[in-house]
Length: 174
Image 1 (spheres, rainbow, N blue to C red):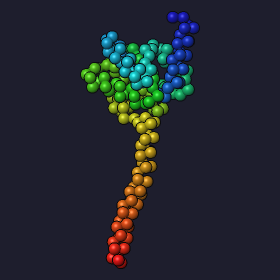
Image 2 (tube, rainbow, N blue to C red):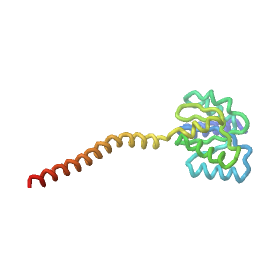
Image 3 (cartoon, helix red, strand yellow):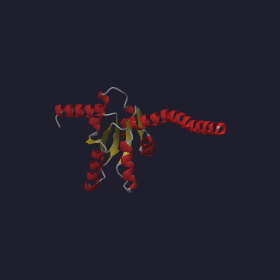
Image 4 (cartoon, one colour):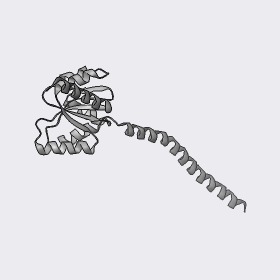
């Protein structure tokens, strides 16, 4: 491969990583054609960009970016697929689904999500538990609505009691 081609590929990888909020490094070399197609389809459906990259080119792309990705460099061995995502837990959930089906691959090598580095397949559960931005917003909205709902409920029940008392008093006076 020519040096100019390598430079262009490094730049493409770096731009792809910059375009997303996080990325996963995954081992997919042992997948057969059917499982590879299934993984690609699942990634497409989950809005995850899946790329097979050379470790040296990915290493240089990470070095060219702002930020410290040095903790991920040891994971750049064997073959590596790059899963880029805007939803931090989406690839982890997808990988867990493959594991539930009894597949040993794809295997998580490392991830960079929410400015945190995760190394090793044992981090899959932690990554799947990360809440997305929309899930966090929904939690905050639910927490904010809860006290208001309690006040409205209390006022409605108190209003019903007050109405009952007033009606009883008005009947007694007659």
